[in-house]
Image 1 (cartoon, rainbow, N blue to C red):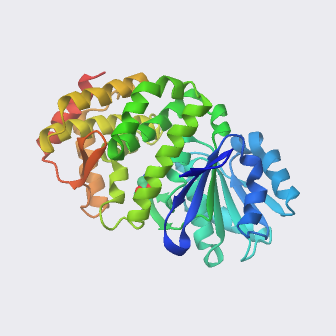
Image 2 (cartoon, rainbow, N blue to C red):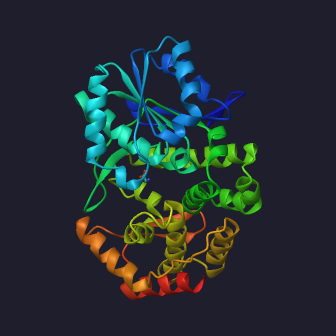
Length: 370
Ligand code: GLY
């Protein structure tokens, strides 16, 4: 990671497809300049959603205009239920109606779902457009916008249609996080805790000491936590872009149980990070039985999550519901569901098979925390 006065830069090292993740405060208005710097000179289609456009349309439009770039703004509906092929088809049609051609580019301006859909459109329409990510949520800034996973859901499951399609650059303005609803901001913190758990013990200690400041959205803390997280994501993606060796799968720490919680509740009751927070604790408990993860480190993870106000209250869901769902997901995904388990804070073991009674005990433990 390098920095100048305003921008922290992290390189995702993928040979001739390498790119920078630029994180700063108040840098969204530099998007036009950065497009030009990357030789993106044609029309720019900005795919976003109504709430984000209300806040940032004018700033992005004038930055593109100031740099002589024609822009077209397209709005899609928010939410996991709209992340589907119908939305993709509408976007294809709107882009073509707006005379978007090869050589033009697409910006995703918004959260993770916007980036996933816009990226999939960029990867597939007319065999591919240059693509830029301008994430405006914590979750998107530290995870979804980096690493090139794009795609949409099918009725049978999440992200079943997609591609690996890397952006030309990522521009993350932490000032955009100030307008996030409290619950959504907190939910993104779960992914930041995830990075500390999987790769960086020192960062875990930093979070123990600074989580309150992060929750208060103090700029210095946000910039540090987000750029460290981006650095870890970039390093992992650089080692295993296509998720072939198991390295990239460590990013799924907490996600097996987390996805089961989300899908059982129709992606409506819990935000992604809330479900992942419970999933990380469950994986931590499995770790105490399978990898020798120390019990006192599990206690530290639970304590940190409690500071972030994750409640572990999973309502009327039961451990058996979760186990049934995990078995179902495993079938849909071709029998490949394994767990990422911690060995110690800052180190995980990917692709671990866990006996069902151990999973059940872990779920009982999470339920008992409420
Ligand atoms: N969000 C997990 C990954 O990018 O692999």
